[in-house]
Image (tube, rainbow, N blue to C red; front, side, top):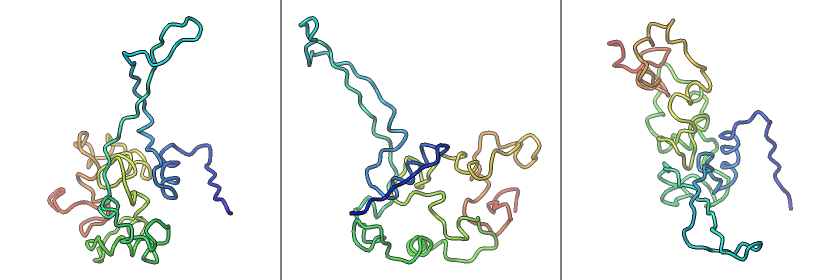
Length: 191
């Protein structure tokens, strides 16, 4: 019997650990689901051995996070993507080809394509099965963009000075653009 040993660098974040483990194993708890709520029982469940008096038990409940599920995963249609229901072998040679087999809007050639999309690395931003974030993202909103691109200096960038409450994707397409090398959406700045 062979075993898979996954070693993680000490600097790995909890989300990175989750992403790696959930790629190989189903049922890995989300980092956010580790937050515990303590509930005190009103009925004695045990006896305190030192006094002989009933003791109140403390039960810790992990709340269920809101999950966004990939449609084939939700419908348990594993064979749409995997060759053998629960195996790791995919029906296509690459993730890029596999994702584009359903997500047809990524097939057309665009003038400007975001790096991960251009090289078929959908999993840089998306979880293939489930996520706590809309669109199966691996991080929430701005955190996803700033993880790779860093924080922008809004004060010294006139294009961003009026967008304190908006998100990156309000103006920028996360996938591609025919308008701008900065992946601006067609309706931004009248372009």
